[in-house]
Length: 300
Image 1 (cartoon, rainbow, N blue to C red):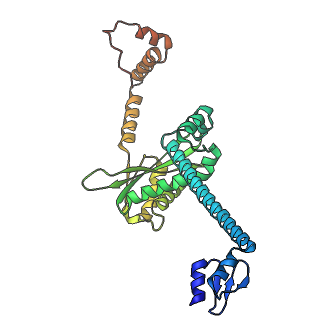
Image 2: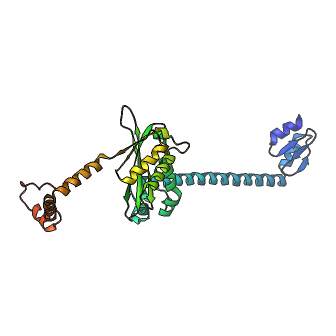
Image 3: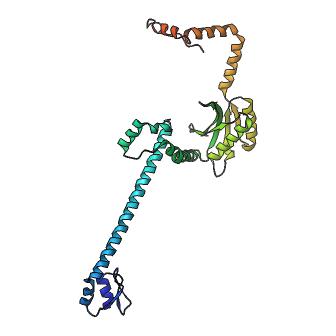
């Protein structure tokens, strides 16, 4: 009882006992413990005080290292979150990522955010894919198990590459559904096979666990023959899907047929466009006219 009392009084960090002897863990020696003052004398020795100071210094260094590590990880986490938010903001705002290299842009962000500004390559390599994944997950959560329509059309980008764009929208009974641009994919050639592959890839993006083919009810495209052929093949995978061609393309074909039937009128309109629209001199002359004379209607 007496020895356990000494351990509790002078510190369990420094002393221990087995019930028969009192042992100093710092000095690694047996301490005479018949009376209290003998234990006190050991604590006042130079060796014991030196060991206590070393132990305190080691604990201080360990605590400081832990605090620095925790602080560094917090700062790093904050910087990563800022970089990801910056990348997401620039993509959503249609700001090219290379703009982050502009000196004025970097100075502005550094001044008002006090955050380290990442380079374009850092944003592109480390955060762009994550932002894309977050957006795909957001679209998937919004669509869920709803019935959808799908539209695919191809266009050419600034470099002349053929790009297929996939747009999906939810079908709801009492209100308009949401519409999303789900995927953009570069095509080597435009025919029914690549379009079918793009469609299937988009559905796997939307439902990564299991494609809900029964929920695809409508496929909207232009009236190109390869689109019609692709739609017939896709209807085997999505049995409830109906293929609809856009009315605008049908009206355009009617207008082209009418235009071909009246070549003189077509020539007249073309000459009018050449004189009043494609001539800079005539455009400047029209702008100098009296204000009460309106501009002529723009020919179609």
